[in-house]
Image 1: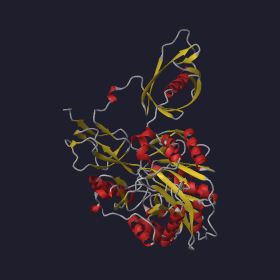
Image 2 (image 1 turned 90 degrees about the vertical axis):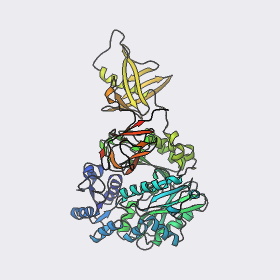
Image 3 (image 1 turned 60 degrees about the horizontal axis):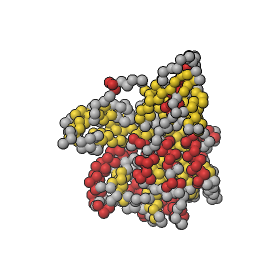
Image 4 (image 1 turned 90 degrees about the horizontal axis):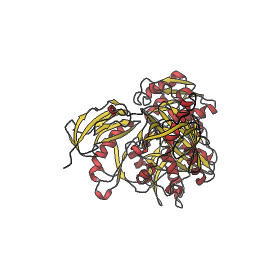
Length: 623
């Protein structure tokens, strides 16, 4: 029997595993980097062991340090979570060689699926349908579009869709560099890209006695940068017979490699066609939707299988529908740029919320940008989707910019509600989903709440006061609002101020009463779901940057610079000049205009803060 588990991971998944361990009276051990010294998973574990350093390469990817930590803390088992070393066969062997229980599949099974190219060979031999890889040197116009994909790892890293033959070599290089950085293996391959395909997967659990259970299906088609954003179970609107074929192929895949534990077999589905993509030999991020529909605890099943238990009888029957949305600290309108800073408040009441953060925690630059997974369950799909959208819309999220609004609009988009979505959903709809009108009364509510706080001890005036002015910035630009102090209280043109307190303003607008919840954290004001930054009354002219300045859109590390790029280089508008690595993803910084690079301040390996000046492009004068 397992008595103490070290989770070789961080954040949400570490907290998730600890939760089940506590329910089973199993002691918990965390490992943490210097950046995670005060992280939630570090705080909630019974014991925590420091891994010196901040980056994943220095810490969570150091298998020998994690095994040593387990032995030092007296753990008798290791759970890898997802990401990092979860699909590293050498790490699994090191855990077993140290006399510890490995809560995962046999190293041989991990190794068989670790390389996606090798996995495709095994699945082809087992009769599992798949897309055959293409020779990168032999790709022609007729083969387009194609997908460049990392042979190792997952999470969408090292993947590129190529629609123009001229872009293939550069995308191969970029994908290889990202894969090398994320997984330590830059091997990539090319396969056909299926337009309008759906990403459907099967959760399997296998014991060490030859039993394999398939737990329904999940649809994970809504993705950004090949990373899943919204997932659901069961997969809706599958063609007749497709689910049976998926189950058959998934169990065949598991039996082929003598699998044990929890795993996921992923497929691309297009109409009646089913194509094997890969097998993830670990717990998936989206496992909660399967838990909700089947009424199981997949982490508890992992622990049970690791202890040698049998899966008796048949798997439980599914009931109802579950939908999960990944809440990210990122700005979808700015090329999904990750965000950092203090998470002042995170509350999504009424549904399941799996997170690695609490109020007041810091979102750093070293790790994934996911804040939480919001999961709603209901008897029908329509009810589950409506419940999740409503919960997210009412959520209180104060801190860095998030994708919350995008999630709500995605869940309510006709293509999603009618189950006609595919993996190209955001390619088609991102512009519309991120183009929104600001709430014109949010800045006024912020100003009135602030004015109430300042006037509590000031009394009223006999004479009419001069209009007061406040300036704010939001995602929609700058806003200037005006109000007055009068004998009757606070007033503003065009609205009736029914009440104004520091945390709540009630306005009557065109005969409709509206409430505005107001919260302030330093120079940030949150009015319902609108985030505002307080601006000085008079702008500082010294804060302006020269035209053509390339500023870092996020804190991160300069991963690389375009070949041959130096001061004086001629550049074309849209040319990629600099690549920043932040939160485990690469982000391109492109030339804002055609002209000459007059300054280059970035260098590979350099750490930069948000807003740092990276380079300057002087635009060519018009002819």
